[in-house]
Image (cartoon, rainbow, N blue to C red; front, side, top):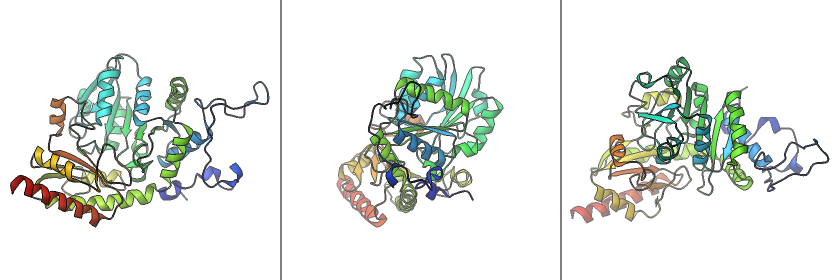
Length: 388
């Protein structure tokens, strides 16, 4: 019987029945840079931690299992993972990328990857005709779904059909839903990207990134590049992510439950112009999400009636923290204009719908009533301050 993902978060099946590592339940932190050998060409399987480390290797096996992949590779951050991913392409290669991506990805593509000769075309992958943008040198399609921060939903299976028809790689950033709610490889993607800093860690206490694939040829390229560039995740950080994954399921379920309650509350506020959450039936990607994912996640974006109202909210929140990042147990509110998407040109931000009145909420696991009470208080104070 195929094990459910809640169990996979806790148990790596291939290790069961063994009492290695002195029977330790928590996988040990192998905090070592190098390894001794008993003789020439008599390696114990580990030579130098830049190449391979037992703690990182165990984490990679867990993440590969969660994504139903063949191999996973753990990096020092999500951006380190994407940076290495770009190294499998050559100067002159062309990538079709969704226009509404995390600002750090856009910054990397525009300022580093393009400098290295890779060409990008940014389009709305959930709505535009992707095939009309494919050219002879196109090598990949790069999407997030849902996107950051406007929560656009792309049909992964449909996009995978296009990529296979044209012999392209389909790369899916799965950070917002985590493998608990969505498995792009099962839908035809070739590579899955994660910022492990977010839901996989879940505690806002470490940075990490992952690349996962089912393809041996791609895995071989990643294995060569990770040892060559030295971008692998450190042992202690690997252990922190392992610890976080143990509670991934219950965190995702609770955060999603809270997000739905807050989304419905926001819909009834006169100062809120729009609530963007895929769990709402009116969201244009709602039905696609029901088809390709097991949940809607805990990220939501909302537009307020003015920039002044948005800035006042950010100034007044107390329990909800005004901070960049997402996916932790604490609820965070973010201002994309000056935080996650500060380096994205204004015309692109506005085209994607990111205005000075846009706020993004990463809903945590607090009691939903407490979160809504804080929002009620902050909204009421702001209304009195601005309107008397």
